[in-house]
Length: 382
Image 1 (cartoon, rainbow, N blue to C red):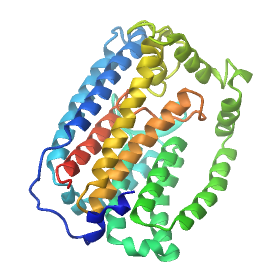
Image 2: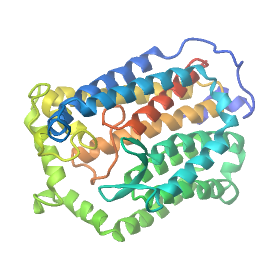
Image 3: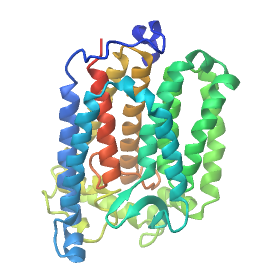
Protein backbone atom coordinates (compact mmCIF):
# COMPACT_ATOMS: atom_id res chain seq x y z
CA UNK A 1 0.00 0.00 0.00
CA UNK A 2 2.33 2.75 1.26
CA UNK A 3 5.24 1.10 -0.51
CA UNK A 4 3.59 2.17 -3.76
CA UNK A 5 3.75 5.84 -2.75
CA UNK A 6 5.78 7.47 -5.53
CA UNK A 7 6.99 10.18 -3.19
CA UNK A 8 8.30 7.63 -0.72
CA UNK A 9 9.91 5.58 -3.47
CA UNK A 10 11.60 8.52 -5.15
CA UNK A 11 13.25 9.89 -2.01
CA UNK A 12 16.30 8.53 -0.24
CA UNK A 13 15.81 7.78 3.47
CA UNK A 14 17.63 10.95 4.42
CA UNK A 15 15.69 13.18 2.02
CA UNK A 16 12.88 15.04 3.69
CA UNK A 17 10.75 18.16 3.28
CA UNK A 18 11.53 21.49 4.85
CA UNK A 19 11.62 21.50 8.65
CA UNK A 20 8.88 24.12 8.60
CA UNK A 21 5.36 22.70 8.68
CA UNK A 22 3.70 22.89 5.29
CA UNK A 23 0.07 23.08 6.29
CA UNK A 24 -2.57 22.42 8.86
CA UNK A 25 -2.88 19.14 10.74
CA UNK A 26 -5.68 16.69 9.93
CA UNK A 27 -8.51 18.19 11.99
CA UNK A 28 -10.81 15.32 11.03
CA UNK A 29 -8.43 12.96 12.85
CA UNK A 30 -8.46 15.32 15.84
CA UNK A 31 -12.27 15.20 15.88
CA UNK A 32 -12.25 11.38 15.78
CA UNK A 33 -9.86 11.14 18.72
CA UNK A 34 -11.79 13.71 20.75
CA UNK A 35 -15.01 11.84 20.02
CA UNK A 36 -13.59 8.48 21.14
CA UNK A 37 -12.00 10.02 24.23
CA UNK A 38 -15.25 11.73 25.23
CA UNK A 39 -17.16 8.47 24.90
CA UNK A 40 -14.43 6.80 26.94
CA UNK A 41 -14.81 9.29 29.78
CA UNK A 42 -18.55 8.65 29.93
CA UNK A 43 -18.10 4.87 29.85
CA UNK A 44 -15.35 4.88 32.46
CA UNK A 45 -17.48 6.94 34.83
CA UNK A 46 -20.57 4.83 34.33
CA UNK A 47 -18.69 1.53 34.64
CA UNK A 48 -16.53 2.51 37.60
CA UNK A 49 -18.87 4.65 39.75
CA UNK A 50 -20.55 1.84 41.76
CA UNK A 51 -17.25 0.15 42.60
CA UNK A 52 -15.50 3.43 43.33
CA UNK A 53 -18.28 4.50 45.72
CA UNK A 54 -18.02 1.22 47.58
CA UNK A 55 -14.22 1.17 47.76
CA UNK A 56 -13.24 4.83 48.02
CA UNK A 57 -16.42 6.51 49.24
CA UNK A 58 -16.82 8.59 46.08
CA UNK A 59 -18.13 7.63 42.63
CA UNK A 60 -15.69 10.04 40.98
CA UNK A 61 -12.41 8.30 41.94
CA UNK A 62 -11.65 6.75 38.53
CA UNK A 63 -13.33 9.55 36.60
CA UNK A 64 -11.05 12.16 38.17
CA UNK A 65 -7.95 10.17 37.24
CA UNK A 66 -9.17 9.54 33.71
CA UNK A 67 -9.79 13.27 33.29
CA UNK A 68 -6.27 14.05 34.52
CA UNK A 69 -4.76 11.56 32.07
CA UNK A 70 -6.93 12.92 29.28
CA UNK A 71 -5.68 16.43 30.02
CA UNK A 72 -2.05 15.24 30.05
CA UNK A 73 -2.65 13.26 26.87
CA UNK A 74 -4.10 16.28 25.08
CA UNK A 75 -1.09 18.39 26.10
CA UNK A 76 1.29 15.70 24.83
CA UNK A 77 -0.71 15.31 21.62
CA UNK A 78 -0.51 19.05 21.02
CA UNK A 79 3.23 19.02 21.68
CA UNK A 80 4.04 16.06 19.43
CA UNK A 81 1.86 17.51 16.67
CA UNK A 82 4.14 20.57 16.62
CA UNK A 83 7.46 18.67 16.68
CA UNK A 84 8.74 17.80 13.22
CA UNK A 85 8.57 14.01 13.03
CA UNK A 86 12.11 13.76 11.66
CA UNK A 87 13.47 15.17 14.92
CA UNK A 88 12.57 11.87 16.63
CA UNK A 89 15.30 10.11 14.64
CA UNK A 90 17.85 11.62 17.03
CA UNK A 91 16.41 9.94 20.09
CA UNK A 92 15.08 6.64 18.74
CA UNK A 93 17.95 4.42 19.91
CA UNK A 94 18.05 5.86 23.47
CA UNK A 95 14.25 5.57 23.71
CA UNK A 96 14.35 1.94 22.61
CA UNK A 97 17.16 1.20 25.09
CA UNK A 98 15.23 2.81 27.95
CA UNK A 99 12.15 0.83 26.97
CA UNK A 100 14.05 -2.48 27.08
CA UNK A 101 15.48 -1.60 30.51
CA UNK A 102 11.99 -0.77 31.83
CA UNK A 103 10.60 -4.04 30.43
CA UNK A 104 13.39 -5.91 32.24
CA UNK A 105 12.72 -4.05 35.50
CA UNK A 106 9.05 -5.05 35.33
CA UNK A 107 10.09 -8.70 35.60
CA UNK A 108 12.26 -8.14 38.69
CA UNK A 109 10.52 -9.19 41.95
CA UNK A 110 9.80 -6.31 44.34
CA UNK A 111 10.28 -3.81 41.50
CA UNK A 112 7.63 -4.79 38.98
CA UNK A 113 4.09 -4.51 40.34
CA UNK A 114 1.94 -7.63 40.15
CA UNK A 115 -1.77 -7.05 39.51
CA UNK A 116 -4.10 -9.98 38.90
CA UNK A 117 -1.20 -12.35 38.24
CA UNK A 118 0.54 -10.15 35.65
CA UNK A 119 3.70 -8.17 36.30
CA UNK A 120 3.26 -5.25 33.88
CA UNK A 121 3.65 -2.07 35.91
CA UNK A 122 6.29 0.12 37.53
CA UNK A 123 5.65 2.91 40.00
CA UNK A 124 4.38 3.61 43.47
CA UNK A 125 0.92 4.20 44.88
CA UNK A 126 -1.58 5.53 42.35
CA UNK A 127 1.14 6.50 39.84
CA UNK A 128 1.85 3.53 37.59
CA UNK A 129 3.68 3.20 34.27
CA UNK A 130 3.09 0.29 31.92
CA UNK A 131 6.34 -0.09 29.92
CA UNK A 132 4.66 -2.27 27.29
CA UNK A 133 2.64 0.80 26.26
CA UNK A 134 5.87 2.75 25.78
CA UNK A 135 7.24 -0.24 23.84
CA UNK A 136 4.51 0.14 21.23
CA UNK A 137 5.57 3.67 20.34
CA UNK A 138 9.30 2.96 20.70
CA UNK A 139 9.11 -0.04 18.36
CA UNK A 140 7.16 1.83 15.71
CA UNK A 141 9.68 4.69 15.78
CA UNK A 142 12.68 2.36 15.69
CA UNK A 143 11.55 0.15 12.82
CA UNK A 144 10.16 3.03 10.79
CA UNK A 145 13.67 4.44 10.89
CA UNK A 146 15.51 1.14 10.32
CA UNK A 147 13.25 0.01 7.49
CA UNK A 148 13.60 3.38 5.75
CA UNK A 149 17.40 3.18 6.03
CA UNK A 150 17.72 -0.50 5.08
CA UNK A 151 14.90 -0.84 2.61
CA UNK A 152 17.02 -2.51 -0.08
CA UNK A 153 18.23 -5.15 2.39
CA UNK A 154 14.68 -6.18 3.27
CA UNK A 155 14.42 -8.06 -0.02
CA UNK A 156 17.07 -10.44 1.36
CA UNK A 157 15.68 -12.80 4.01
CA UNK A 158 18.90 -13.52 5.94
CA UNK A 159 20.62 -10.16 5.65
CA UNK A 160 17.54 -7.95 5.94
CA UNK A 161 14.50 -9.58 7.51
CA UNK A 162 16.12 -11.85 10.11
CA UNK A 163 18.35 -9.21 11.80
CA UNK A 164 15.39 -6.87 12.25
CA UNK A 165 13.19 -9.71 13.48
CA UNK A 166 15.88 -10.67 16.00
CA UNK A 167 15.88 -7.15 17.40
CA UNK A 168 12.08 -7.08 17.60
CA UNK A 169 12.01 -10.50 19.28
CA UNK A 170 13.77 -9.01 22.31
CA UNK A 171 10.71 -6.87 22.99
CA UNK A 172 8.26 -9.63 22.05
CA UNK A 173 9.89 -11.99 24.55
CA UNK A 174 9.97 -9.46 27.39
CA UNK A 175 6.31 -8.48 26.94
CA UNK A 176 5.27 -12.14 26.66
CA UNK A 177 7.11 -12.88 29.91
CA UNK A 178 4.98 -10.37 31.88
CA UNK A 179 2.79 -12.25 30.73
CA UNK A 180 0.92 -10.23 28.09
CA UNK A 181 0.10 -12.30 25.02
CA UNK A 182 -2.41 -9.74 23.66
CA UNK A 183 0.13 -6.92 23.50
CA UNK A 184 2.73 -9.31 22.08
CA UNK A 185 0.33 -10.16 19.24
CA UNK A 186 -0.38 -6.45 18.63
CA UNK A 187 3.35 -5.65 18.58
CA UNK A 188 4.23 -8.52 16.25
CA UNK A 189 1.29 -7.78 13.95
CA UNK A 190 2.35 -4.15 13.64
CA UNK A 191 5.95 -5.20 12.97
CA UNK A 192 4.93 -7.49 10.11
CA UNK A 193 2.61 -4.90 8.55
CA UNK A 194 5.44 -2.34 8.60
CA UNK A 195 7.81 -4.95 7.16
CA UNK A 196 5.38 -5.63 4.33
CA UNK A 197 4.86 -1.94 3.60
CA UNK A 198 8.63 -1.39 3.58
CA UNK A 199 8.98 -3.87 0.73
CA UNK A 200 9.81 -7.28 2.23
CA UNK A 201 8.98 -10.20 -0.05
CA UNK A 202 5.58 -11.76 0.48
CA UNK A 203 6.93 -15.30 0.48
CA UNK A 204 9.31 -14.39 3.31
CA UNK A 205 6.45 -12.94 5.35
CA UNK A 206 4.24 -15.96 4.65
CA UNK A 207 7.05 -18.24 5.76
CA UNK A 208 7.55 -16.30 8.98
CA UNK A 209 3.81 -16.26 9.60
CA UNK A 210 3.65 -20.03 9.17
CA UNK A 211 6.60 -20.45 11.55
CA UNK A 212 4.94 -18.16 14.11
CA UNK A 213 1.85 -20.37 14.43
CA UNK A 214 3.65 -23.22 16.22
CA UNK A 215 5.36 -20.66 18.48
CA UNK A 216 1.97 -19.19 19.36
CA UNK A 217 0.60 -22.67 19.99
CA UNK A 218 3.54 -23.47 22.27
CA UNK A 219 3.08 -20.20 24.18
CA UNK A 220 -0.53 -21.19 24.80
CA UNK A 221 0.22 -24.82 25.64
CA UNK A 222 2.94 -24.12 28.24
CA UNK A 223 0.69 -21.78 30.23
CA UNK A 224 -2.37 -23.56 31.66
CA UNK A 225 -4.33 -20.32 32.04
CA UNK A 226 -3.87 -19.51 28.34
CA UNK A 227 -4.99 -22.99 27.33
CA UNK A 228 -8.01 -22.55 29.59
CA UNK A 229 -8.83 -19.25 27.85
CA UNK A 230 -8.84 -21.01 24.49
CA UNK A 231 -11.15 -23.77 25.70
CA UNK A 232 -13.35 -21.15 27.38
CA UNK A 233 -13.52 -19.22 24.12
CA UNK A 234 -14.81 -22.36 22.39
CA UNK A 235 -17.49 -22.97 25.04
CA UNK A 236 -17.71 -20.34 27.81
CA UNK A 237 -20.88 -21.94 29.22
CA UNK A 238 -18.94 -25.07 30.15
CA UNK A 239 -17.70 -23.22 33.26
CA UNK A 240 -20.10 -20.26 33.66
CA UNK A 241 -19.03 -19.37 37.23
CA UNK A 242 -15.32 -19.87 36.62
CA UNK A 243 -13.24 -19.37 33.50
CA UNK A 244 -16.26 -18.44 31.38
CA UNK A 245 -17.60 -15.81 33.75
CA UNK A 246 -15.94 -12.79 32.09
CA UNK A 247 -17.08 -13.78 28.62
CA UNK A 248 -20.64 -14.63 29.61
CA UNK A 249 -21.14 -11.42 31.60
CA UNK A 250 -19.75 -9.38 28.72
CA UNK A 251 -22.14 -11.02 26.28
CA UNK A 252 -25.04 -10.49 28.70
CA UNK A 253 -24.17 -6.80 28.86
CA UNK A 254 -24.08 -6.49 25.08
CA UNK A 255 -27.29 -8.49 24.65
CA UNK A 256 -29.27 -6.63 27.29
CA UNK A 257 -28.46 -3.30 25.60
CA UNK A 258 -30.54 -4.16 22.54
CA UNK A 259 -30.67 -1.59 19.78
CA UNK A 260 -30.70 1.66 21.76
CA UNK A 261 -29.32 0.55 25.13
CA UNK A 262 -30.51 0.97 28.69
CA UNK A 263 -29.28 4.56 28.90
CA UNK A 264 -26.17 6.19 30.33
CA UNK A 265 -25.60 5.20 33.94
CA UNK A 266 -28.19 2.42 33.78
CA UNK A 267 -25.78 -0.51 33.47
CA UNK A 268 -26.57 -3.52 35.64
CA UNK A 269 -23.32 -5.32 34.90
CA UNK A 270 -21.31 -2.40 36.33
CA UNK A 271 -22.82 -3.12 39.75
CA UNK A 272 -20.14 -5.75 40.34
CA UNK A 273 -21.28 -8.50 37.99
CA UNK A 274 -18.71 -7.81 35.23
CA UNK A 275 -15.04 -7.82 36.31
CA UNK A 276 -12.76 -5.26 34.60
CA UNK A 277 -15.89 -3.35 33.57
CA UNK A 278 -14.09 -0.04 33.11
CA UNK A 279 -10.84 -1.45 31.64
CA UNK A 280 -10.75 -4.52 29.40
CA UNK A 281 -14.54 -4.88 29.14
CA UNK A 282 -15.50 -1.22 28.78
CA UNK A 283 -16.91 -2.02 25.33
CA UNK A 284 -19.46 -4.35 26.96
CA UNK A 285 -20.72 -1.54 29.23
CA UNK A 286 -20.88 0.72 26.19
CA UNK A 287 -23.09 -1.83 24.45
CA UNK A 288 -25.31 -2.27 27.49
CA UNK A 289 -25.93 1.45 27.97
CA UNK A 290 -25.89 2.70 24.36
CA UNK A 291 -26.93 -0.49 22.60
CA UNK A 292 -26.08 -1.60 19.10
CA UNK A 293 -26.18 2.02 17.95
CA UNK A 294 -23.42 2.90 20.39
CA UNK A 295 -21.17 -0.06 19.62
CA UNK A 296 -21.52 0.30 15.86
CA UNK A 297 -20.78 4.02 16.19
CA UNK A 298 -17.57 3.33 18.11
CA UNK A 299 -16.48 0.67 15.62
CA UNK A 300 -17.21 3.17 12.86
CA UNK A 301 -15.06 5.80 14.58
CA UNK A 302 -12.15 3.36 14.80
CA UNK A 303 -12.56 2.44 11.13
CA UNK A 304 -12.52 6.13 10.21
CA UNK A 305 -9.44 6.63 12.38
CA UNK A 306 -7.70 3.74 10.58
CA UNK A 307 -8.69 5.15 7.18
CA UNK A 308 -7.41 8.59 8.12
CA UNK A 309 -4.15 7.23 9.49
CA UNK A 310 -3.44 5.12 6.40
CA UNK A 311 -4.40 8.08 4.20
CA UNK A 312 -1.75 10.15 5.96
CA UNK A 313 0.73 7.29 5.47
CA UNK A 314 0.00 7.08 1.75
CA UNK A 315 0.39 10.82 1.30
CA UNK A 316 3.56 11.20 3.36
CA UNK A 317 6.41 12.81 1.40
CA UNK A 318 9.02 10.24 2.51
CA UNK A 319 9.33 6.58 3.46
CA UNK A 320 10.10 7.23 7.12
CA UNK A 321 6.88 9.23 7.53
CA UNK A 322 4.90 6.60 5.64
CA UNK A 323 6.18 3.77 7.85
CA UNK A 324 5.74 5.80 11.02
CA UNK A 325 2.13 6.63 10.20
CA UNK A 326 1.48 3.03 9.16
CA UNK A 327 2.89 1.68 12.41
CA UNK A 328 0.96 4.03 14.70
CA UNK A 329 -2.29 3.44 12.84
CA UNK A 330 -1.86 -0.33 12.71
CA UNK A 331 -1.05 -0.56 16.42
CA UNK A 332 -4.20 1.35 17.39
CA UNK A 333 -6.36 -0.60 14.93
CA UNK A 334 -5.04 -3.97 16.12
CA UNK A 335 -5.57 -3.06 19.78
CA UNK A 336 -9.14 -2.01 19.07
CA UNK A 337 -9.82 -5.11 17.00
CA UNK A 338 -8.42 -7.49 19.62
CA UNK A 339 -10.30 -5.85 22.49
CA UNK A 340 -13.63 -5.80 20.65
CA UNK A 341 -13.03 -9.37 19.50
CA UNK A 342 -12.52 -10.49 23.11
CA UNK A 343 -15.64 -8.74 24.40
CA UNK A 344 -17.81 -10.16 21.62
CA UNK A 345 -16.31 -13.67 22.10
CA UNK A 346 -14.81 -13.80 18.63
CA UNK A 347 -11.30 -14.01 20.17
CA UNK A 348 -10.00 -15.65 23.38
CA UNK A 349 -9.70 -13.39 26.42
CA UNK A 350 -6.52 -11.26 26.55
CA UNK A 351 -5.69 -8.36 28.81
CA UNK A 352 -5.59 -5.60 26.20
CA UNK A 353 -7.50 -2.35 26.55
CA UNK A 354 -9.61 -0.43 24.04
CA UNK A 355 -7.68 2.69 22.96
CA UNK A 356 -9.16 6.02 24.12
CA UNK A 357 -12.12 4.19 25.74
CA UNK A 358 -10.76 1.99 28.52
CA UNK A 359 -9.51 3.31 31.85
CA UNK A 360 -5.73 3.61 32.05
CA UNK A 361 -3.15 6.37 32.02
CA UNK A 362 -0.23 4.81 30.15
CA UNK A 363 -2.40 3.62 27.27
CA UNK A 364 -4.33 6.87 26.90
CA UNK A 365 -1.40 9.27 27.20
CA UNK A 366 0.91 7.34 24.87
CA UNK A 367 -1.86 6.71 22.34
CA UNK A 368 -2.47 10.46 22.20
CA UNK A 369 1.27 11.03 21.80
CA UNK A 370 1.16 8.71 18.79
CA UNK A 371 -1.81 10.60 17.36
CA UNK A 372 0.18 13.82 17.76
CA UNK A 373 2.98 12.35 15.64
CA UNK A 374 0.39 11.34 13.03
CA UNK A 375 -0.94 14.90 13.03
CA UNK A 376 2.53 16.28 12.43
CA UNK A 377 3.05 13.93 9.48
CA UNK A 378 -0.29 15.13 8.12
CA UNK A 379 1.08 18.69 8.06
CA UNK A 380 3.64 17.57 5.47
CA UNK A 381 1.39 15.40 3.30
CA UNK A 382 1.48 15.98 -0.45
